[in-house]
Image 1 (tube, rainbow, N blue to C red):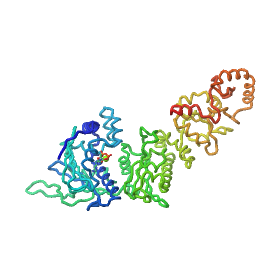
Image 2 (tube, rainbow, N blue to C red):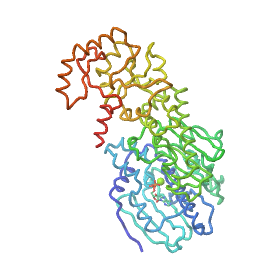
Image 3 (tube, protein in one colour):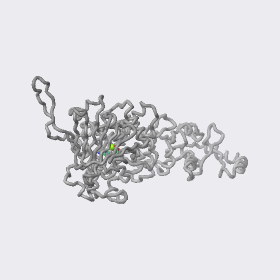
Image 4 (cartoon, rainbow, N blue to C red):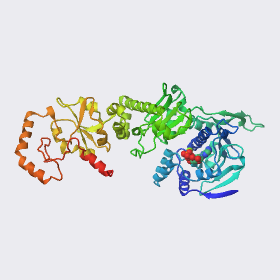
Length: 564
Ligand code: ADP
Ligand code: MG
């Protein structure tokens, strides 16, 4: 029984793109196929937690890579979960992965850009068509009888064929019929090189058949010949389980790229074994670039959870506070049950301890950048500075640490490099507050009439134009003992900074202009709650301020935008 089916429209489009674009890095097809084989073994291990019978008689999970020079084929075989016929149709004929769908939505039609995008996303299984003009998949799902195997094959154009086959081995075998220009992959040395580069950290053994040199007979040249023995060609230990000293930064970078689909190396890496009441390993990365949807607070978190090296779930939100959702990496715990669910995670004490530990680690990483690498810290600020501010309202325990990491533009600097500590060090004699102003844009903040008196007196004011500023600053009332004061609120009290003459002038103005102020108050009675004479303006005739303790105009606007 065999049937021909059409790819989902998006798959057809993706295939065309993958095969026709100048793929800058064709060898990644092997990384993708090995990563799928490894996922399939993870899935088997996970399902077998409840049904050990799924291992059948073959519990040693592994991946085999082999090639046949005469047939011009390369085959990747795993003894993982396998595919049923329906799964082969669904998973290899449609785009199930949301990441790939996002990717499709971003395609511009410009080949060069799009090719770069593929590199960033990794398109998984279909990348086989970069080097193959035909792919045959043979598989049997764990637990199904040998008679319910499946063969899936396609030349990567519009259709694929599915046939029922007899298959005794559990798992999946993917055979690439290589294109004429890709025959150089029929070479053990080359394949090993690629496996070492991309798949060394995969925790399964990746095996290849040993070869040895065979002298040619009758003046024929000698050649490498297969021996029938298989050897493991990767380290076969999950990267995070290895000792730090045995791991190079390149290996960390490769691992990061693989789990994040980022083409750039991470900005910072931290890898630790935490011992004590809760034991776990953390391998965490700060990316060099913010994702496009960073301000979506529901966005998937970036940390994968393993329990005793068994993969449990992607995007384990409970492992990181929301304001650190940009962090990628792995947490491997030995204290959680293997059958832990997302709901259980929310309540677990161990998870709480892990989250606190991870948060502290990430903050140390950022502090380290701030102290030792100005350039990287500037990149961090530009990409993640705004999202970090959310922490002021979310993570009270670390509020002081976070406040030290924030940087702002000010009325006297053009770059967002001013910390609260810098500001304090520059405060004027007699100044007893940290002044700031919030606005929609930096330009608006800078040209605000509210700043006039501060300029005149040479007092620095922090300019805040990130959307989160207003909200976040509601949670920060002081820094290191010095109160924060919005210059747009109430009758700004310049305290000791105001000289006696100015105070007198203000009081006199209040009496002198009383009749006019009353008239204005009357005219504006539905719109303003008070009208005052002020000394805060130098050039502008009037400005709006909010009552102390009221929502600022900025926050009011933001809430209105959000429909509240
Ligand atoms: P992803 O791995 O991100 O899900 P891929 O395009 O790499 O996307 O793979 C698509 C799907 O095909 C997988 O989710 C899986 O269901 C199935 N698949 C691919 N390779 C294998 C394999 N070796 N064993 C079992 N299923 C596989
Ligand atoms: Mg994949």
